[in-house]
Image 1 (tube, one colour):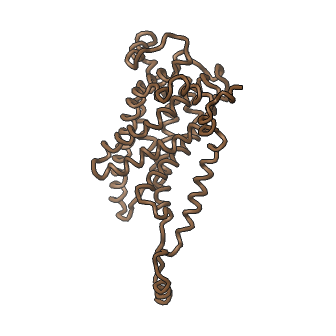
Image 2 (cartoon, rainbow, N blue to C red; image 1 turned 60 degrees about the vertical axis):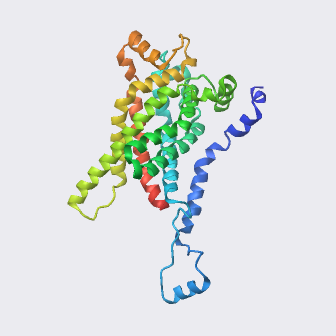
Image 3 (cartoon, one colour; image 1 turned 180 degrees about the vertical axis):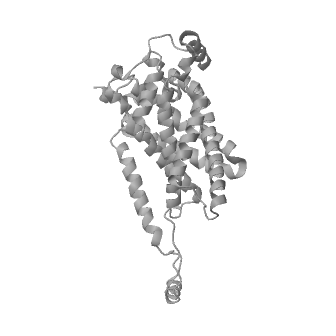
Length: 328
């Protein structure tokens, strides 16, 4: 009966059947593109190819990324690595959300299925979150430096990450039982703005977090490469394990700085799950927590979030250079 009441557009666009196929489609895409690695440039004439074969000239190789511009490789690699990392760590993030709720919900209250509820659908949003972050960072850094570039990437990615967080956290806390119901009910109640509930604390957390993470990565990468080149002048790149270590360290530093904002953001987004008087603003939320629960509550869920964020950025920073190099 509920499904019959769903708007046709919602049923068509947000049907979950196609979403699990996203990783498979990406794998097929990379497989097809990789076949171009040994292809001869089609712009060569038949006579030129004949001459080349006679003189044993090596054929012109087309990169695995095909005719795509170089900046798009960062977009594809960043988006794919972020989506993969987020889907793997979704249960940990669900536990972090529960630890930060106003009424102290536990896994026993919402059931074990909450750890994976909406995982495939909301993790697919991360394709675009990562694409925005790495794409903007890559394009802006040469002109304005990593600090401005990371801030722009964080702000741009909020167009996707805020709706993702709203839907994900309401699914985890049991406000809605399915992704389809969440999208339909939010749309019917508040329209587009409903998907951006709590956008101010989310941006207040995301921008400093991403700025700290990306600038820390840039600084650590430079220092490690400088140290390695002093010992071996032929070293030009970091190993995957070094990139993972940089991601973990950068995320831990950023997490310490932004944990209180993350708690406020979660409280604002999950108010519908609580019977308490709603907060009127992010400032009201912060002062109310300190006044009634103590300042330590602003660091609730820090352990779960640290595991999630260190794993997320460790995997992302470990995979992104590999995928970019593969496409190049």
